[in-house]
Length: 119
Image 1 (cartoon, rainbow, N blue to C red):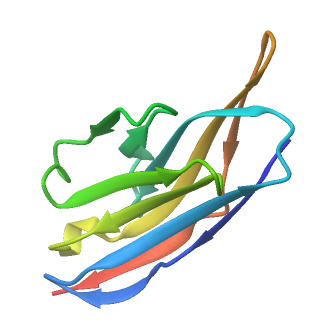
Image 2 (cartoon, rainbow, N blue to C red):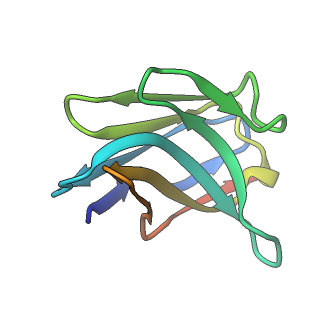
């Protein structure tokens, strides 16, 4: 129903910044919530931040005050600005998009992008 293309991951030193992007292409569904999750080695995937179509945001406690999620509805793109990065932020970051059309609901995931923070 949609193709999600992520970009912006990489290697950064502690205290540095990165900006992730996720563009949704080819969707015939309405795009509702857009969010970012992450999964570190040996750990479960966890919510990092989510933003509704109206701009309401929600963050994990561990990133509040350091990360900012935003979206450009005209471009069907969600961003995650990550500042003051810590080694514990190291993980594969996944974009998630909630889609709907009528009574149908679909959750779509990106391929993941690696973020590595060195100490």
